[in-house]
Image (cartoon, rainbow, N blue to C red; front, top):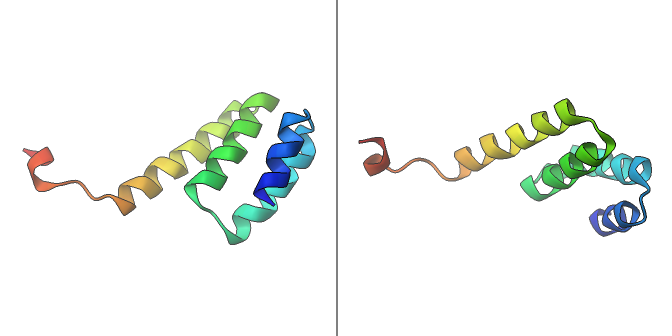
Length: 73
């Protein structure tokens, strides 16, 4: 589904691409999927929605990669 959304994005079919990605992130909210939907939102001018998704990606990354103790010093 992600590849189809990318194809729609390349064709300029933003609404179709966004719809596919919205369905996909319900079951697979991976950072890659969230970033692709954020990119679609950016191209649509939905900057606040895109920023929210990018923030989710960053938060997910922080949960996956905890800070090392030496970086806190």
